[in-house]
Image (cartoon, rainbow, N blue to C red):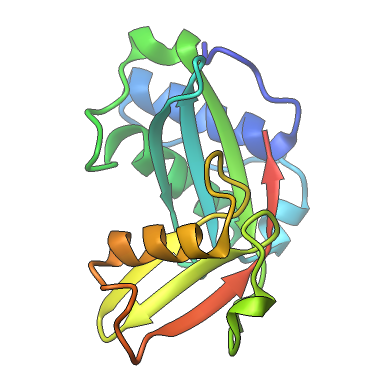
Amino acid sequence: MIGVKGEHPYVRWAIRVIEEYLKTGKAPYPDETLPKELFEKKAGCFVSLHRLDGALRGCIGTIVPTQENLALEIRENAISAATRDPRFPPVTVEELDEIEVSVDVLGNMERVKDLKELDPKIYGIVVVKGFRKGVLLPDLPGVDTVEEQLRIACLKAGIDSREEGKELYKFRVERYH
């Protein structure tokens, strides 16, 4: 069982998905035990896995919805965070007791015209240049300035942060632990 059981239904659903997928190889289908809004809402979301010491163990998400509802969006991103994050080996059943799960549901993207519009504690960002795209969620430990947030997002996209012609977007998240 995953280390710290979530209280929020979105987190409990992500945990259920990860546990069932790792144990059976099959993704559970959303059912009537889930809140109705998970079936009614479409949104991008990120599922993040951390070890109990706080170290990142996996994080995968979508900035715009790719599934027919938020229940399926969380399911797909939970499986990917646990098994397909290229930075980490897949999570094992033996690790489940030492993993914490959070779900970030993304709000609408807004084009940023001036860096003064940003606050790394409030807004996540998306940096785009051509086909390259870097995303950074808000309120991350150690990311305290707009410059640091922008530098990391550009690095993730393979974009030089001094490069001209980048598009920048901001978004808010609803974070559930």
